[in-house]
Image 1 (spheres, rainbow, N blue to C red):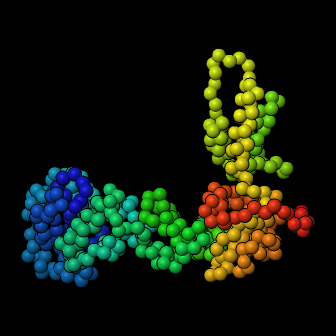
Image 2 (cartoon, rainbow, N blue to C red; image 1 turned 90 degrees about the horizontal axis):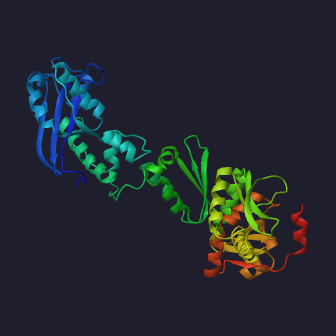
Image 3 (tube, rainbow, N blue to C red; image 1 turned 90 degrees about the vertical axis):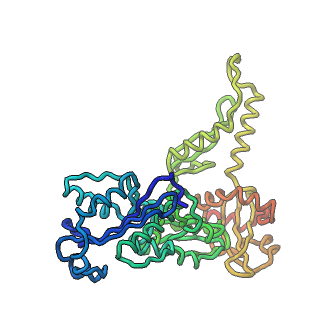
Length: 438
């Protein structure tokens, strides 16, 4: 059923002499719908009082001889108006159909005012990113079969079915439309593995990258037909999936390729009274922060969240500052929140699935900084003993990859509880100190 109020809808299609401003009607079909039931079908040829172009005759199979024997518009005007008045006018491109009807009534000195529903415009709003929105393309999309194409009754029946589908979709109750046809083909080649997902436009340029635990799931979420995905749906012409075995390694690759311009930091500050708090500072050489941001607004929003977590009861009767006990509790809260921006351990190795069967990936953290990542088929115990020897990519201290690792802290802590996917390293090898300063 059409999930709308129980109004009367008249689905209309018109065939005309052409697309020019001087066009005239040659056929009209009106399907009257009440409570999702067809209560009347009206169709007729209309004599335009002039020969129609050969192209139109070939397209519609309507001949000049048939039109010469058909009634003229002024003979049908009252019958058409009777069916339209008080109803919602529905057509595929109401600018064309309703515009031509208004023109014909204006020639008779009459005005036609109707509420209308344009399936073309609604489809453009609800299904962003389609390559074409003509009746053929949309009927193909919804798997609607069109009979008697380019005849008013055939096109009106197809428009009716399209109207029903769009009515369901507009109220978010339609279960079938999830992806655009061109994206369905792309999604079939995306594996359900961790990696770096790249979205490319028609020129082959990568305009977005996503590090993901499951690239297929991420691609489907970002390409699902939703209003918030409109711009991405319109631009995406290709998808590239690079399996990394670890979403964290994919995040490193994303950072290294695109870079991050981080201009603001939040760090801690101790007052003269010994009370710790958080503050925002411009990022400069030598300034080490807990959280890093591209804009001041992002930093300010984070600071507000932190301050809300630190907020305590205020006593109206008290004079002076906080007690030593309150300052201690404040400092403990600051330290607890600060730990959220640090790795679970200053020295640890994370091990996960590799890119292929039997392979493992590893990420190494030393002195609270990401050292690098690699791949190996060696046993886990051997990886934990000497992780440096398996690194494929090494980083000299790099803020971006440190931040990428910290974005996954909550996930890492959960993995420790569930699968022991990371392990703390108690010893720092001597050669690491030499490498970390090169």
